[in-house]
Image (tube, rainbow, N blue to C red; front, side, top):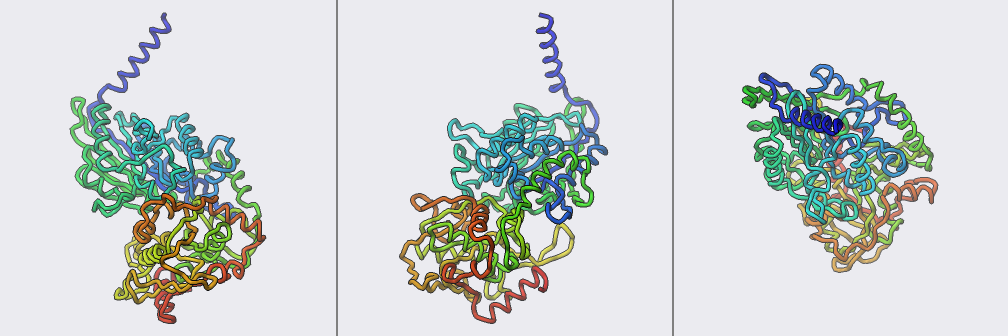
Amino acid sequence: MKKALLTAALAILALSCCTRPPKDGVHSLTLLTTNDVHGTWFDSTYVDGNTRRSLIAVNTIIDSVRAADGKDNVVLIDAGDCLQGDNAPYYFNYVDTLSPHLFPRLASYMGYDAIVVGNHDIETGHRVYDRVAKELKSKGIPFLAGNAIRTSDGKPYFPLYTIVKRAGLKVAILGYTNPNMKGWLQEDLWRGMTFENLIPMVQEDVDRVTAKEKPHVVIVAVHSGNGNGDGKSLESQGLDLLSTLHGVDFLICSHDHRPALDGRESTLLINSGSHSRNVGYGKIEVTVKDGKVVDKDLSSRLIMVRRENPDKAMREAFRSDYEAVKAFTLRPVGELDGDLVTRESFRGMCPYINLIHTVCLEASDARISFAAPLSYNKTIKAGPLAFNDLFTIYPYENQLFVVKMTGEEIKGYLEESYDGWLASPDSGHALRIREQKDQRTGGTNWSFTERTYNFDSAAGINYTVDITKEKGNRVDISTLANGEEFSPDKEYLVAMTSYRASGGGGLMPRGAGIKSLDGRVAAKLPEIRNLVYDYLKGHGSISPEETGKTSLIGSWRFIPDGTAAKAIDEDMALVFGKR
């Protein structure tokens, strides 16, 4: 009886502590954010002893801020894409599936208050993200995605929000994943869910949570890019939310890897970029009088992460995990007979992109292949290859799909791809590039206007691309690789990534005019990185001569001959420097 009374008394005391109004005066709360870490968990690159920016170095900043501002005054949030992009997540996602997953252990060590689900987290599949969500929960860290709605009962598949007490204030953290998930990923990966538009859902949830919980500070974290604020992008709704939300103090954005700070009225937007390069820092001074909030003063900035300043204690705490990943990724897998330089893909055919095309065509019954350079500016040197090199050759966990397409749809698809790749004839450039301020350095640089992972070329056909013409008239397909006639009316089997087949990048719906895959998917094969590994096991080496056989992959080039190559060389020099 006494034990029951004591338990009840403690429960009442805990409730009163949570509901007690904050003391009068100024309460200072610090917000720290990360996003799009993409598996940069360890500060080593595994192979050369060099250090890099990572969560190990991020934690140095977190610890220093907590020491300066007080641990109980700091909120730490990640806005998604944690579980993919590097050797370590791959190892704990798919190789060592029996040990406790490393990411929840890292998140717990660093003291995260909430993690948001990213599109690449969903890409790992139910077995991975369900396991991670469970292990995060066991450590008191919610994996948030309030707009991922369970189809069976209409309730959120992941938690919508969490409440934390910091700086004597009640803080509500609401989290959402990207609503355009269906546009990139095949249904097998997100089966049982649907993904709602962030507008007007976020505002409706904020109103409901605020009415129920009565928080003093409201933070919304979305795995969505900043966007242009024009309401046209389902993928990037950050500025759309910023211009419409009320009752929100901080809006954390992500996904587009573009560091940004913005603010309108009483809400500040923070996007720390990607790959552990920055930590987002927000400060809010909340003035309380007579138990009520009467004023708020907000500020924000980005803190650059210094790779030379890792948290040595954290490094040692996870040393055995690092060594396990390193041993796995340094396993020999074959030989490379010539350098693979990924940026050469932007000039035209090259050994790197030829390899991807060859692997996709040899592994499937497809006659034609679409592929884009997924590593922007990397070089894999000739010589022995380790499993680690396969992450450079193919960094994402995309499956290979074989899709039925007509010749006319193939041509439209390529026209759409090259329209993002090439500038208008009267622009003064061959490539679609622009000069802009580098937010990381403060200087200016040249970069591609569009995302280069959408620069698909084709193999299995012979064609030219005329840089002097406009979209719709650039691509001229002559024959299949073996010399057979290519017909706009004939149906062909086309190899492409699961991301692309599901509409990622817009090339299927906008260019090919294919809105649905119903009846079109002829085959679903393993992940493309694994197919590259299988190719090595079967051939023993990667030879540019073998992967460049025109009888299989055909050929293509930019025209007019000479003129196009010179113009493209000039633009490539602006973007990458002179060779």
